[in-house]
Length: 210
Ligand code: SF4
Image (cartoon, rainbow, N blue to C red; front, side, top):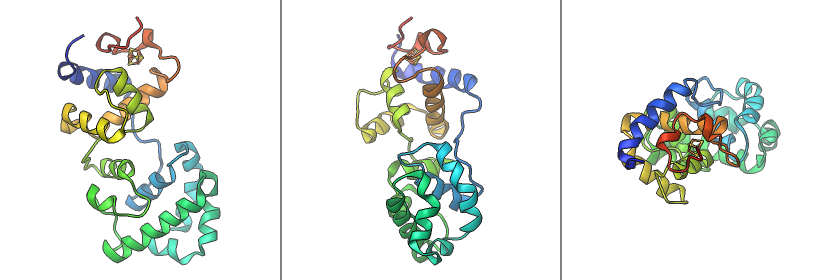
């Protein structure tokens, strides 16, 4: 097994060949819808979010629309995504700040995004990457598990894992790298029983069982 610096580019290239459809699963048509979808996706699946958003986005088109409706109405509209009171509060707070501080636009810098109520580093990284300006690397449960199995990090803490990955992954790949790991994690490198015999990077992986 070579050092991780030598393995990272072939890992990315092979995963990109294998998962050519590896993109974000959330459906949105503009920056505001992107931000709201990512906020709603906390603690639930993208499929669940996509079930709610077509109706939601027809009803709420501008930041002002989210503030004009009574809070309980917004809670009801997002209820199936879980933690709906907390999420409704975060969305309303975010819309207020967008209007007051960002001219009603979604900011593109991670430092600005994380100031929005209920927006953590992971959400900010996802939004910035989808806007074509990744400034970090999204670390979710799949990215954490695969980075550890591939020997790219020894850490458990997402912030430390992100730092390790940012040192290793070429900047041009910061946006697609998490998608590649997420899809590989869903299809091949499963949490309980990784399918190493069907894995295109098994010769580059120190955890391979074949
Ligand atoms: S070889 Fe096995 S453990 Fe390593 S990435 Fe592939 S499926 Fe995961």
